[in-house]
Image (cartoon, rainbow, N blue to C red; front, side):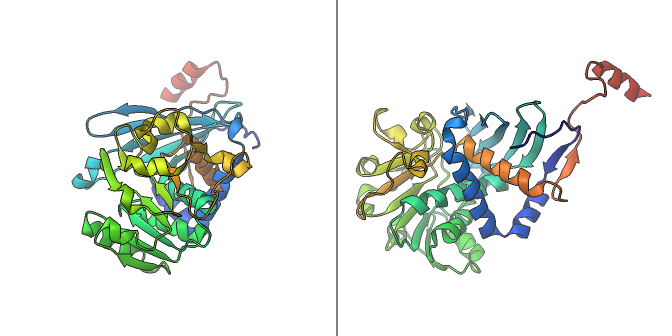
Amino acid sequence: MPKPSAQAFVPFVSVENMMRLVHQVGVEQILRDLANYIEEDFRRWELFDKTPRVASHSDVGVIELMPTSDGESYGFKYVNGHPKNTSEGLQTVTAFGLLADVYTGYPVLLSEMTLLTALRTAATSALVAKHLAPKGADTMAMIGNGAQSEFQTTAMKAIVGIKSVRLYDVDPEATKKCARNLEDSGLKVVICSSPEEAILGAQILTTCTADKQCATILTDNMVGAGVHINAIGGDCPGKTELARDILTRSTIFVEYPPQTRVEGEIQQLDDNHDVIEFWEVLTGAKQGRKDEREITLFDSVGFAIEDFSALRYVRDKVRGSDLCEPLDMLADPDDPRDLFGMLHRAKA
């Protein structure tokens, strides 16, 4: 990436402008674009600084920072996860992110990331399913029909090519909301009354529930041979969605093991249990799906490189456009040694 010149104003992408960007590009196209950027960065995985996210846990939720750098650009995301917020009319997850130039240390982009996180999470899920799901997969079970469900479903349609989605949530109103939002998607949408009904005939099983607890959304006897499980709801210590026996029968793919072993489904397993890092599948270092009867499991908790990719994409798309606004957030005097002088002259 070219080194930007130092600038006093930082481009800021608001929620309104993020929505404008998505509608200009198209939801399905932006999901495909994000998947391409994520794949590009995963293929150069070894260049990145990698660390588990820095988390501050409380009784009601978690607040996290997710940093990374490829040596030329540095990025981080601030994100929270508060399941109780839904009952108070608030979002479970909110986020913003920043991209900076390593050479100068100057920020080059500040962006909302509540919408962008939903998009990049869905794009990552579909990218992985494209490589791991059984050949010809055309039906997905979407268990958990909250804020992420429509993004996940749309990404699977745009990138994997599913034709049908089977919906279930413990809250019937959430399922009705999801079905309503997918009415014009071109997908066959089936409302189901139980998880067991939802997985009938589905080759891809996506679990995305919000309760901050160890739960069993899928029991061992519900999962047959030859499916791909996209487990994205378990994303912090003490929060899981799958019965342990499912894990022991599956080939497990993860983003970054030191983070996933603490936050993902595999926190239920011994630390030495074998997992495959997904970037290794993309580079050919490891094999993906081996046969049609194998159960593949993507134990996704979200990783900083995916956010870096998303911010990189947004930076490229809004450059030179009216989809961002200049933010005066850098004190940048003409003489870099005279910060006090800049302050003093401002009084006059």
